[in-house]
Length: 389
Image (tube, rainbow, N blue to C red; front, side, top):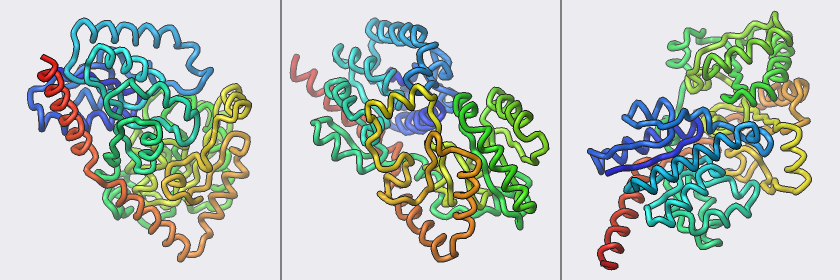
């Protein structure tokens, strides 16, 4: 069994590694290749190109790498047309994966996409690229199914692997022991993002806000997990310029442990916000696109969702304060953090009950469910091929 997979960033790498484990239970001798990160490679996956080359977002941010990305995609299509895999799975990275999936699907290679793009939030017209490009769309969230059914796309809700991995009740005690943090301190976790572009657009305001908060709350501890040395260097350079005297505890990776150890979180919007919700911590989420990207979004009114964070969309309620674009300022961040900090205990408990309810909805043994859908897909394809013969 030859299975090809493309994952474009850290969150996709995690999903891919868990899916490989589940598929190996069905196909013990399967071989896996494509593009993936450390997590997938630890499961025996062969990455043909570094995953980091695909980790880019935005309209204009992708331009410097456009020809490289097109070249990589063309080479992969040719590779798998010459030596067809038994199954192809594109994990997220829709702008890269959809054309690849269409080319392989047209060659009668069974094709699936894991993680539906945020059609509910922006660019619903992308569904035209989906229809006819794959055999099945595996979605992480139940509210996505209605949109795919409306456009006659075969979609299956499988749940979210993070909801399976993270316990329904996460205490701070063990995480603080692991990280060497005091049990009785008030800890604010600061997650400025895993991409260099996120550090560039958010770190300065996060650091300025932390400095103001430290002046107001001298007993608070500020902990910052950073994914790798490049991100750490970029963050430290900004800190030296903005607030060299600010006391921060910087930790290599371990973002989940840091969130688990915290009382409250300030973070870049993305998958980490969902993770923070599953861990059960009050959060403030912020995001800033490059100015040209933001201009295009507004000019063509591409954003259609009421909220831009997943917990708020899942709940259809404003559970997580959101700061977008020019609203991302140190002053606004401090205001939101302190308002959340000052909430009555009853409101804080109600927030965590909301988070816990969503957690239970997403806790579906996702990787095994996804593997089962893919097994059924391959079984049906084999029957179709036999009938044609």
